[in-house]
Image 1 (tube, rainbow, N blue to C red):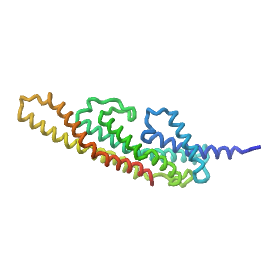
Image 2: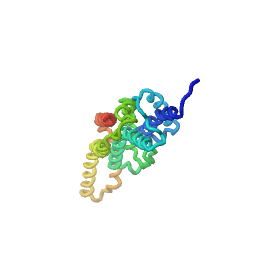
Image 3: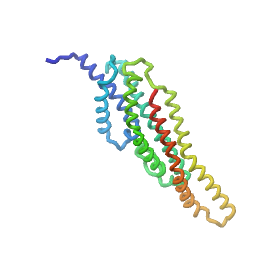
Length: 254
């Protein structure tokens, strides 16, 4: 007859509960997997499936008790590590969204904004379009597989029963947050510079021919030339987007 004590049962539950917390934190903050349109049941089911596969492969060690002071610290630690892993991959999506906002603002498509379910904010068509492109690129470079591989390796870098300093580098996460603006501005710079020259030309035309109704022709001309600029700049955005995605997914490694 199989018998076990309450201590053994608690240890077995903890060996699955702590990895589950980290996996849930990653899925909640990761790109695509953490999208609000994905039902919570699907996210929890995926997290349970990943945990069942990963838990038996984790390094052996004394896991903290669930209901203890050490257990509370471990809970915070696992949430922080999972969010950090997902945040480093999501940083590229935020940068591309910022680039799309800058492009749409200069082109004039910010008037045709809509509600973004992912960020609970208004987003223009250019931003949504670029986000869709970078999502497809993320899947094409197997970013989701790299993310899961980094999750599995994170239990070796930051073990559950590891020392108190077993946390990702906070300074590196802050630097990744600052990269949002640098990457977004670099992606949007060709279109922004083109629209700057277009607006200067329209200003000169307005001064040279005051009888010209610049507002009647300025908006459609700006929209047309802006779309043309995006069309010609699009082939040159592939390499920066792929590099940014690779930097984001590799930024999950210590």
